[in-house]
Length: 325
Image (cartoon, rainbow, N blue to C red; front, side, top):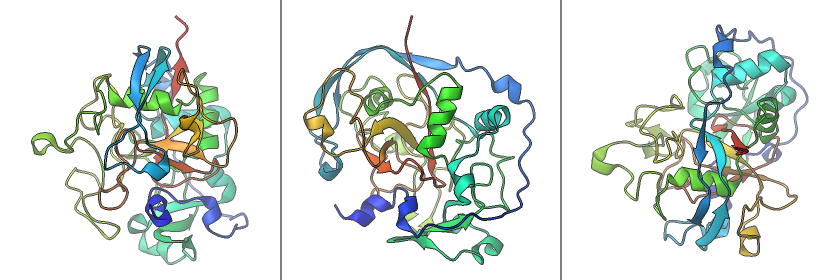
């Protein structure tokens, strides 16, 4: 597997030379009625058990550490039915005044076709090897395509441009945590055994779109026949057997684990939590930019990674929690 195949998933901050801080005048989104979204108990109970994690599927990427399929046992845990939305993240920002990594660095990666002409004229850097990822000054969770964009009409979409650090901070504020990779995959499978997707082995059963991914020729033409060129609302498409939405496609979701391709070969098989340290954190689920011909990582066993301070227009998260009942 070549490195540029991996890089389509998301770009890392270390793929370009470090920039100085950028002074940008921003008009922050004011979201009304935030308090009604403060209910943090909207979680789904996932019963503990043993499942086959990973895959030996011919579509898998062995170099990513997807296989071999092996038995993993998990305790009962809780996980949110959806990714964290822009509305929910706005409440977190309002109550904490937290500054995201994208805001701290002054930029984030935006997919080239979403950048306005005016903003595009100011872009001077792109990600190495993956030039469709543009370095856009002023892009962050509330300005997904740059300072001339906003999330006012996308409050029920997943919060994006979220680094692992940002996701971890939100989870701590919400008295939750990020899911482990094992928990994420177990939940994503929805009770199915070794199926390719959360709903089965067929990508479009009966011709029905079940996830938000790329249709067309990447990276230039997206037919968006699934209804969305960018992110979709978090409750789009049918939920899986556990009632979880968009576990394939839409936006990558951070996991708690540090990423290695071989940790699982010698790790514990009961409640594995990943290596104790590392350089990059694990991501799961794929995004609206994934396509079978290039980044076939919207399968439930697929893995990716990024540095904890990296952010892009296709990276978000959902929360998990220990079950104490």
